[in-house]
Image 1 (cartoon, rainbow, N blue to C red):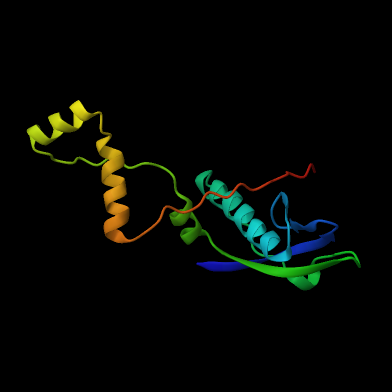
Image 2 (image 1 turned 30 degrees about the horizontal axis):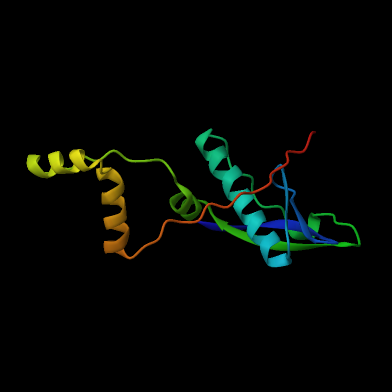
Length: 143
């Protein structure tokens, strides 16, 4: 289910800083669009970690109750934690694949990684690309 959290943005000399008061995070981007993307990514990472630890996700704060300084502004950043998890899941799944013995032998002789070939073939057949990995800077706030 999609929800939206308030995020406080601050203009920097080289981009924008982003702080989500409902999560222990600060991040930034080279421009506003990237800062929004990084905030969404950081909220997604922390949110699915919370779910994995059986912790409840915070209810979004009312943006009118969030304080920001005169040089800051608030924008809502939406996130669908289920979709975020699906797109960013990197865990491998073990599948039992049947090959003719002769084909398996040929692959072994050639030093071919059958799993890698299968992944490549599935991506091509499904016409999908592997999602890009984004590196997000997350700084926890000390309470």
